Image (tube, rainbow, N blue to C red):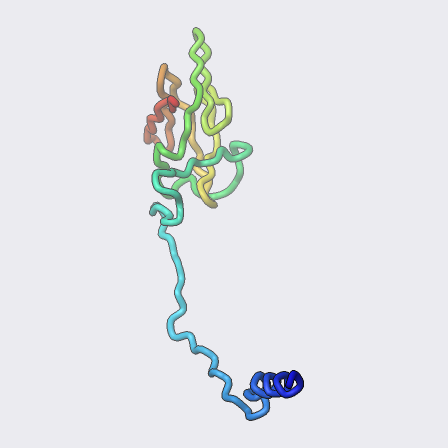
Length: 141
C-alpha cells in the first residue's frame, strides 16, 4: 500500500513535466517606470519634517562649479553655537568653526556654492552669496 501511494504521488507531481505542460509566457513590459527629481523640490522619500542641511566642503577653493547657479535656502545651514567675545566672533555652522569674513564652500548634492560669513550677531549669523544676504538663526534645542 505504501509503495502504491508513493508511486501515485510521484506520478501526480511529475505529470506536468511528463505531459509537456505549458509554461507561462514571459511578461512584456509596456511602460517602464522612472523617478526624476527636479532641482529644488523636496524628495518624497525623506521623513516628514526632515530638511537636508548642506555640507561644508573641504577647502574653500574646490574648483568645481555651482557658484553662479541656483539659490541656497537658509535651511541648508545649521548654526549650533555662537560665541561673541569683544572683537572676536565665532559660530559653528554645519559643524565647522567659522569667523567673520571667512569664505567656505557649501556642498548640496553635487553642487558647491561659495558662501561668506558677513556678520555674526547674538542669536543669528548673516551669510552672503552673490551679494545676497542669508540670515540664519541660532538653532535652540
